[in-house]
Image 1 (spheres, rainbow, N blue to C red):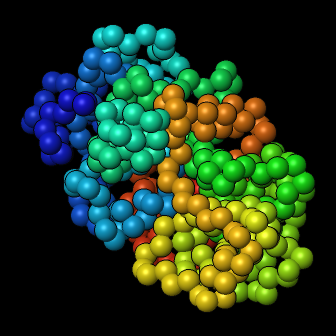
Image 2: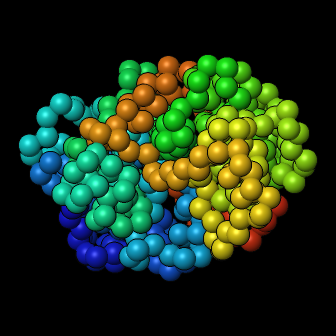
Length: 365
């Protein structure tokens, strides 16, 4: 674990009057309680054995950050959130090999225990005793963060740091499609919920050979992004679903009861539906949806996180290569690119302005 001068107490000049202007403090957005996010000077983490110190290059806002930082809180607080990130190696701890100062890396945010029954079978996404950047340990809404060498993936030469920071949502989409058995050449795919994960799911389906991809969302603005991702058909949520658009593989990435029911009814005979979206309340399945699932022999799949064996799995290595090469498009998703000092204000706007349109918000600390 990174060493801190104090648990989460802001540093003052009195703590270190000589070195305060040097390298022992950093700026970070600290979550104290839900909705109470403060930009503070805190202790810069100290690199331990088996770790590297990263200068954060880019960090994106995940949809899970919204309830975590504004409603429910994290597993422990105060904490620095932020788990979709890339960084340049600035310091290398004892025992670390294979990396050099200046390397750009992306960081899978889960630290699996490696000893539970799920880890023993390579199912790291289902680890029973994991640590996690940004919710259980300090994350990357900061200038620096320490990471264990096991969690580093070196980006290909020339990779944009913002692309490297988007491996997490893109790999979540890939993991989900693989959970559903993949997309075969000539299949029709569908995606409900066109946030960044859904936009990557559209692209993965096309890369795998889908002849068509249907995209559904409540927002016309997000449907426009879906068209940029390559969707061949776009529908507003609640619209009648033509039977001509029944799909072989459906990714549900919204988590709303209505979209979950719609995903089931959108499946072609023998189709597969995989659920990524996290619902807030109860999810009743209508009789019509259940009858369709039953009679059309539809397979329903859950998907959690994005990891495989050996950790972090091909989900991450394949995704990083596709982002770096340009096979996966990502720049069109970034609607806001901001400095870290703007983080508290943007989260306040996310809390209060329900009409605020965004897709991927990216900070460059």
